[in-house]
Length: 442
Image 1 (cartoon, rainbow, N blue to C red):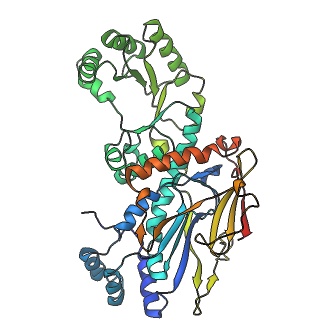
Image 2 (image 1 turned 30 degrees about the horizontal axis):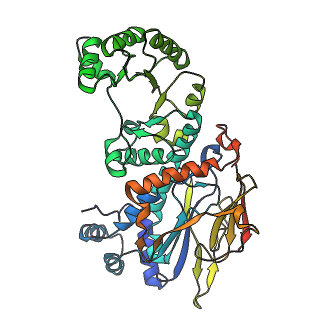
Image 3 (image 1 turned 90 degrees about the vertical axis):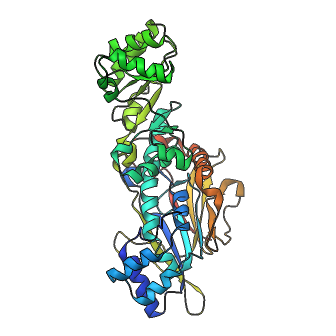
């Protein structure tokens, strides 16, 4: 039985619901939109992640007896609201960018259509998932670009909350990482797992030789030996002597990596271990990975930086009401006018425009009939790709976006979407979004 996700929310979602019920506006059909006003950290593009997790949590957004009893004891909402919550099932529709898609300021990443009551209480859940997962995926995508063809492993579980660790591993995998150290992420989302030994394993034994023998005897010569507990050169020589030239890999977790890696590669080759790989794991971020591009590194392990969004742990996304029906049933656009927080009201859909070489040039937001409607679009349909897909219809989640299969699909789509961007998208310097966002009449 899955745990309810209903209380993963802020109190004001329920107090707004309560007031709307008493005012008679709770059933007014509304359209909410999740988007980012800007790209945190001067990123050139963002990567959508969290869709599969959000849809899974939505399926379990139910107010059971224990949740209702706690709300009743705390006096959070009225009896009228409690009765409404007891029967809550999201029955509306949700559209959004495919997970793994790239996005820009103003991109309607998620569009939720339903009554005010049933849609407003999803705000905190949606934002908590998409803000974190997309921040991790965006940072991880930068690292993937910096690494080129060399694989990266996510190993940041010890640097974030236990549940965030699972989400981060999934987001990093979508963004191109090849594996994670987190076993629950492997079980829940089908991500390959990796890991051998830490310094404590070496320190446990009476000698480094005893530790290496134990690891090789258990895991075979193809294992990865951690060689910087004491003296790196001695450890490399010892590892090759014990495992032979078939030693799988050595891991380096300290030192001036460009210099140390070069020294270790030369030593391994001298010892005949020409196929032994070198992996590095020393507080890496995208800049450190890029700095090692010319070094004979075979793979990277990234921890703190990836699970914290490499300095931008949230994408600054918001969830705003952009339209509702009036008493005559017509859609009315609504928008904030606050200084520096103004929003663009109205029902929207989105498309990406391309040049004749298939390179993305513009993010187009069409105002009009919304994601389920039609728009005139480009004169040449081949030069424009629709970005929004239906994720939920009549309260039913599209199962293709869930689980391990949905995660793999998102990973594949991310690679395709990033490949379409202009070359300057991979720049690691702070700057403007690589594509402009243009609003057009649908």
